[in-house]
Amino acid sequence: MSDLTLYGIKNCDTMKKARRWLDEQGLTYQFHDYKSAGIDQAHLEHWCNEHGWEKILNRAGTTFRKLDDASKADLDQAKAIQLMLAQPSMIKRPVLDLGERTVVAFKPELYADAFAR
Image (tube, rainbow, N blue to C red; front, side, top):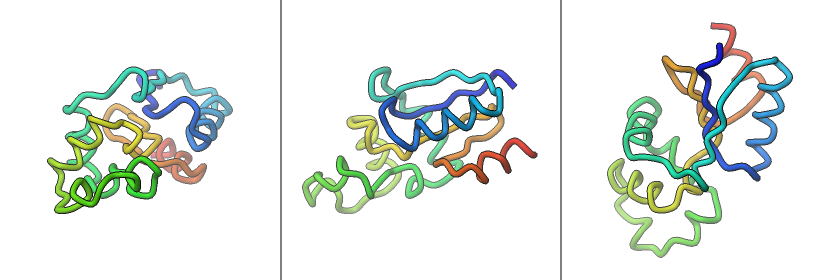
């Protein structure tokens, strides 16, 4: 499987764990750093439609917590996507694109299950 793309931020500890896991399995993947390379609205809409915007928007992160109350109020998918486009650090990471579906976040068992299917 070589059409894998791992989306995230280079220096994130969770990203490093996900990359290490993929490397240890001998899996080939493309890495897309959405902090330096950006992310388009189509990807965010696809991920939000697949998983729900609540799972894609990282509300636990520093970037989101630093927002003013007005930006955090009345969140819906459209507003969440605009926030993530403006500040990609707010996107939950990693997002592993398997081609036919995506896996959000990283846990070894989550990835093992995704590749067992």
